[in-house]
Image (cartoon, rainbow, N blue to C red; front, side):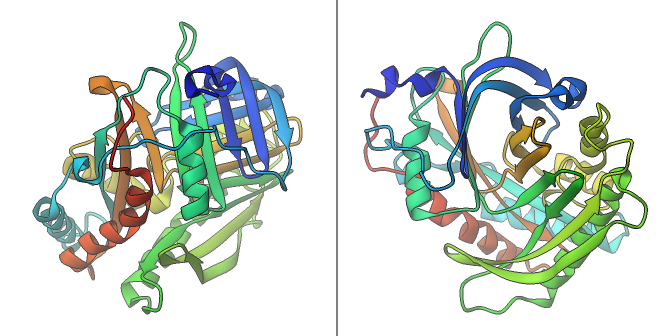
Length: 365
């Protein structure tokens, strides 16, 4: 089957054990939470800058044992040498030093500094073969919150093209229990975590506890996992988990999503602490918008009172700019103890494997 004839181009999404298709309604999740709470299965793509799109899907299939079949053709991505970066090594290291000055002056404790990589990837809308790229990532970089979303743009709603290998849970809900599992701290396999890695995680875990408390029953916020090392392809992360029970005003009521997002978005692990100061500094230091990278990617099933939204890291997204561009972000948490070159190396560690999987030596027009 040619990708141009694949019915998945009409609007579909795939997650761990869940596939959905046929979008029939679109809302802004920040203001249309009452529609989402009323029922249905919704696919969500939120940008770091604050746009929160949700599409209700008419068809949903669940099968944890059967992965989505590939599209029948190989992924054709950019050549490795065609990737550019919004911040080169010198500019990124200068940004780290600027943030360390902010920390010294008491403006902030931690800031996640990111750079955006992009490369030409020509394709007609709604974009290149997302299923082929998702299959390649699933084979070469399996991730617990992997996803693939293609929603064509129409007169009634915006489109989306996202393929993610995210390992990080932003928000998970099961009934009245909400959880978040921030990742902060990265090392190459076999290398020890630094004291700076643990400090990063402690600060962000405390931030997440405060963020979630806005919708929680008093006294219900707990940390069942703290500073746990999790191996991933090519690296190791420190992860903690925060859990809480939803208060009666937010237990799948129309107020749930506006309040939950207002208190927690963008995710603390990819912004910093205090969040308001970190966001101001990010706007100053980063020349390119992050888009779905560091945003929220996942699904909400109001009928079963469950949801799973990942932090949009290890994430590719495609835009039709200049004939089609593939984008990917990478970053590191900056603290007073940060070494500028070490932080640059961390961004390379996080990007190298994924960029390699998404690149090919030839491209299909």
